[in-house]
Length: 433
Image (cartoon, rainbow, N blue to C red; front, side, top):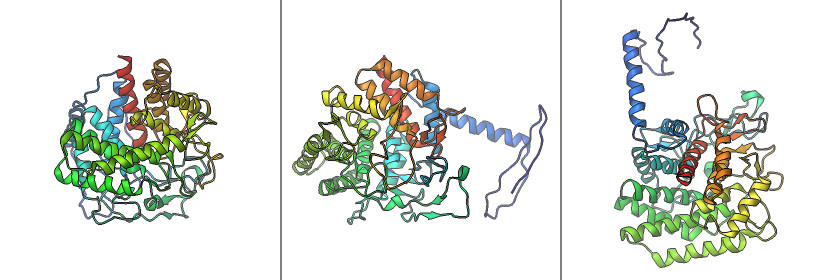
């Protein structure tokens, strides 16, 4: 369906978009009514944004990111989608094209952290409702009491289908709907989720007894299953491995639950939880550290770097000034950072089951800013952060990745990127004073 009309200077027109497939009678809309609706919309967003507690140096970009996260929220269920597009390529002409129009537990949990940090509690509360409706109390599926993702309405079946009749963006095929990663095991989701529950309990409102029951189910499952290889945070399709990041976030899941139990006096199997938490810590320190690279690595007993370990000090697993961490930060800077832009890992060194290359991954670039900030390297952190701001498009939005010539790659706008921008800005502001 297409319509064309021409407006001269000073003229305006009102047009309405019909909902495809719905039996709704078309009607005209007087200019006065359209102006009232527009004014009401602007007032709503200004009122919502006025609740932000951020008053720092990068207010415009932080608030643009907050608006983006809000717009990625599906109000009827509280789910937060990773992006609103499918199959925008991570490499032009390549096959790394995915459908991101779903509620990833990990992405949503990180969004909750960013929104809570700015003082937006309603969205966090709505997501807690989404969570409580989907924790399985009867053993769940192969990935535990939770799937890694859901439809915005809570659907669990998300079969991946290739649309061979479509060429794809700039010839980047296949075009996909659905996402086969729904069937993967990604242990890190439990740490991301329980960290957000912990912060919700700390910053917004004490969690309910029924939500604590759900937390107990999740932590007990993690204690039984943390020592399993999985597909990892990057959803690789090259087979399961013992990813350091997955172990790290299992440690986070148990540690945050223990904090809540101690603070609130909630019932918990503390001896069992502590035993598992400490075992994970020792395993990471023993097998996740490479003496050859002088760095924490992607997976156990190997020498592959991965930017996901930038979460280690952010998750309070290790001090940001620990010698082992500072050495890791230097190794990442030397091998995965290109003019402040950060690659996730090198597919040539760590095959992920797909052809082609990645661009730099923007959430990792903002994680790198936080790593520098927490290590006290503030001049480097500020330079890296402000360079990243120059890669936004003309309205302050980001896709998932940035290519070698500065182009946006991957689905758009990407929640991962915007929530990481908020966190990096908040922490860098605090450090700069």
